[in-house]
Length: 126
Image (cartoon, rainbow, N blue to C red):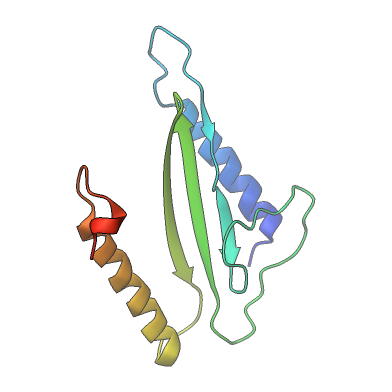
């Protein structure tokens, strides 16, 4: 496994390079770059784990369920877009309660996504 430092710095470099490729042929300078919440979350850290450049800790799999979530966000001309994806790192299939939790979270996300409509408010989503 890679250390947090290498994972974070590599992602930051690639992300900054890619945002620099967007809107490069416009007549005015457009600000662009990495935005919050670009981070990783590991097992017991719910969200927004952003190791410092000098963090040398190592992500270790000790035979139990292990997962991490990568959140990436960028801003282009003051507009922010964010995306996140969870990865489970283990040999063999996911079973038992871990499988149930992942399936429930996925179902909840799909249901929430179907409720989005222009002009609709959260209070009306019941």
